[in-house]
Amino acid sequence: MKNLKRLLFGAIFVTLVILLIPTNTWIKSNVKNQELRHNTRMVPIFWVPGSSATVNRFDGVFKTINSKANSKHSVLKVKVMKDNTLKYSGSIRPGDQQPFIVVGFEDNSDGYETIKKEAKWFNIAFNDLNEKYQFGKFEGVGHSNGGLVLSFFLEDYNDSNQNQMTKLMTLGSPYNSYETSTSTKTQMLTDLIDSRKNIDSNLIVYSVLGTENYSNDGIVPEESVQAGKYVFQKQVKQYTQLTVTGVNAQHSDLPSNSQVIDLIEKNIIDSSSKTNKNRPNNAQDVKHKDS
Image 1: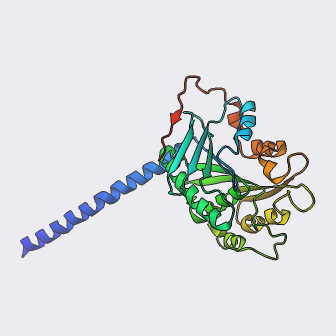
Image 2: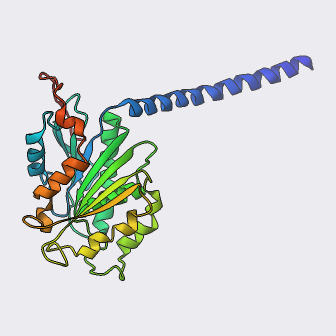
Image 3: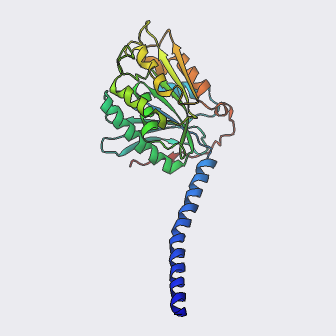
């Protein structure tokens, strides 16, 4: 009887040890990944163009910003295809703490259904990049529907405990589509409002509105851009609405507007990247293969 009890206790002990080994391995692996994200110095800025625009949409913006920077920002472009595959172009320079990553889409048509698909496709690209670079924090700039794509990504896919977006700037993003009054809320705005609690409360948001006249930027009604407040106000750490007027304040010209670029440089670009003179001259670019 005693031998039977010893055998029973021994079997239980061995079983517990076997069960604990993979658990301990998973914990160590998870802690290691968390440490990698915590210790990484890279905080990339993701740029998402609007409908009908390609991954080259922000080339002029990058040229202007880099012309003033002592340490130029690398530019990596990712095009997400309809079959979920990724096409990379460009590269990220080793040691670049704030590279520019543009995510565009093969299907860049207008419409709520497409915007939701693009949020899913953005998540595919984001996960692939995060696996390569293990960044813990990131920022975002979205023009027009690109701002909506980033907003849906934050609500539907992003886990801020793993990867935290610290700042978001939207440029002429139509949160209530083409409606001229928020008394009529579109399904898109309603869905964004319903899921707003999924957005990290520490996020800082800047909503930029361009005006061609007193009611719109030539395409998007002011009220639609301003409807973003129903998504972000009292949910995020800070929500600021900004209006630009004058030359290049029309909807399609917003990314190249000098006032907008100034806002991006002051509120999104890390000030240290403007004065960093320690970039190695012989650094080699990291090339990406399409996946």
